[in-house]
Image (cartoon, rainbow, N blue to C red; front, side, top):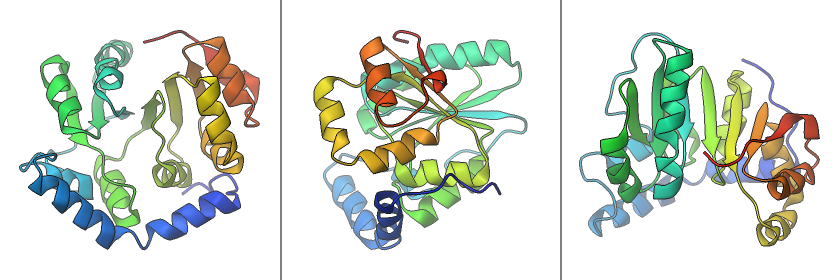
Length: 216
């Protein structure tokens, strides 16, 4: 496995806390399940227990959170499959509503799963099962433990459709070391606009690694 980029104190602290998070995360999921906020047939996916087999061959993993962000991914999935016939695309999201919105729009050769919570054992289960050759994150949702583990395993990651307004940039600046570490783990960052590109570069990311490509 590859050696990940050096981690600052904030990321190290986050990773340490996630080792203690499993009991709390399990109770959180059970509470959401009781309130109807989780799919009763698929909530185990959020503990890294897959409900689908991994097809043979190369696999690209795309992740987004909300409905709007997730619905931008089917077009990208089709483009990836057109460029690489035989590629399987795994699309993950976090909410039940986003999964329901995605279901009728999922292209051939694509699979949907819920992303596990960022608990060490759960994320290892997920990555051990799916073994992605590429990881693509959309817009704003970044899971530090997953990004660290991807780098450790030598799996390239990209951030696409990124957007960050001035208020969000100021908020993230309070944890600038953490966000420097996270953005540093992306081999490629594509933003919706010039302002987002400037904000991300402000966390010490080389501008050559950032491209302004517009909205998906």
